[in-house]
Length: 64
Image 1: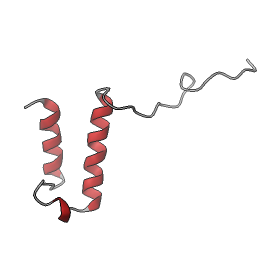
Image 2: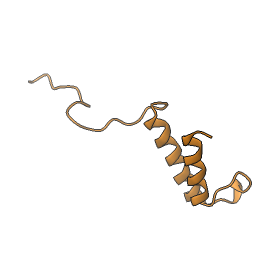
Image 3: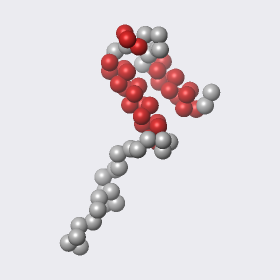
């Protein structure tokens, strides 16, 4: 099992999520798990992530 799968399985267990009871799972737990999955995929460069706002993230003004 790769590290991502193990980490996601651990997170699912922490949130008491199971493929067998998804319909009965609290919405907040499912949303939290989805956020973890998306963050991990973005960290691995597999999904776009929001850029951090900073001087490099915005085009320069034409007035400079």
